[in-house]
Length: 389
Image (cartoon, rainbow, N blue to C red; front, side):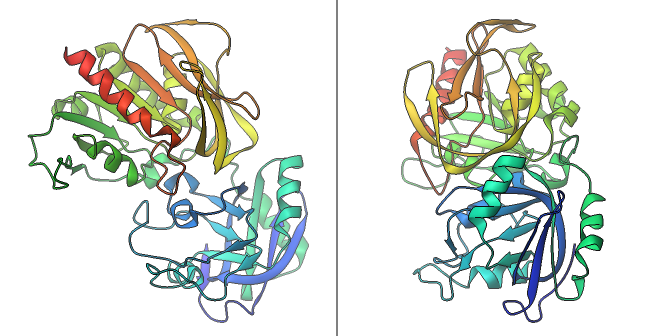
């Protein structure tokens, strides 16, 4: 990625897809060039949380909502230390943000962090194209990066595919850290005094995830993606958590081996998003790339263990290939699909019937909402309580 910050907003820009389709607009954010997988997100709000979600690493995100940036950018809602998207595509950027918490415009923040974007294009046509043809490699070019379309297309086609990409170590923390439990008075509980301790493997974790656990009296030790089983059990965990993250789960051999070691010990285990795919692989199921994925805060999922339907937040381009209507035998006992997407029957959750382990493919922490799936953290607490009893 190469960027500059001069003349954004009036500078011509172009989005080039790997199949040769071209969309022309204006620079939004930094001026320059950037490459990634073009995907679309159907959320009408929560763009700050989306942009700072590490699971979007190496992706150019298309906002399907027609106007973006109305609430500006604040200093409280970031899900990680930086914006992770490779590029951002919007139709009608807000000219002036309006929110009491806003500190600057979205355009200014994209520029500040060097994120190359494009505005003023027909995002409905682009979204329909991606639905029909599938997510694909793309490039956003503006300013001095503009050239003839054939040359830009050739550069897009030189970029690596998302299939086979190992990205989780690029976004994960390099050093372990602790998020203390929150007491009934809203204050942090002294370290070592919490009711439960969880070791959370950071594969691209969002900041709200350990916070949701801390709200339930859990002291969370966030460990790097390169952590060993010895690192996990050094914190004497009551449970182990595997986070969301970017890339192809088929390339994530170390997390799979780590999860199998946890399953062998029978420690209560919870995984979300990438963590669900890792559990699928650990149990012996395959994974595959979806045509255009699930991204947005309005995806209907059924919890098959209760029959309840919840509206959920998603960000995944891969899924677990597990049978929907039968119990499977695995090296760790019986397993079944616990959650399913009602739009397309994609596996959205797994659970073991003979060991305390489960996972979901979506985001129960969902800072921007919806909050239908927050009960899953309570389910994790119940597993730890049951194991302790």
